[in-house]
Structure formats: C-alpha cells, structure tokens
Length: 64
Image (cartoon, rainbow, N blue to C red; front, side, top):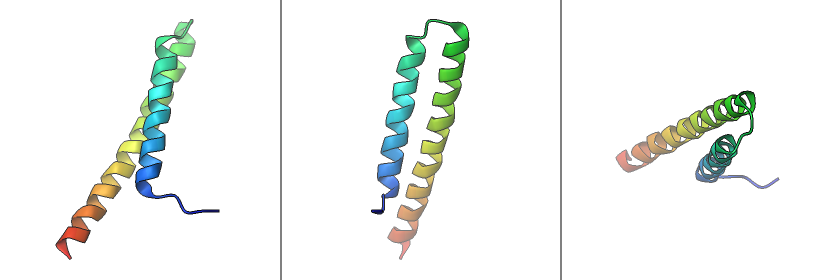
C-alpha cells in the first residue's frame, strides 16, 4: 500500500466533514441531523489534529 501524506489525510478528512455537514443541512429528521452534525464535528476535530501536527512539524523543519 502506498504511503499517504499528512496533508492528504487532512484534506480528505476536511472533505468528508464538509460532505457530512451538507447532508446534515438536508437531513429529513432531527435525529439524522444530529447524528450527521456530530459525525461532522468529530471528523473535523480529527482534521484539526492532523493540521496541528503538520504545522508543528513545519515549525521544527524551519528551526533546523
């Protein structure tokens, strides 16, 4: 299996979160909307963590 860069992971997670938010906006029921909104927030949190990791590694690279 090919390696996936951290930036690719961040971009994919962000795209998934965007899709989930769009689905939540179109949700027919309150329960479905809540589930999709929660999932979007969780995935966006993962993307934010990956982004923080990218930025920390970027700072370390610049310090070298």
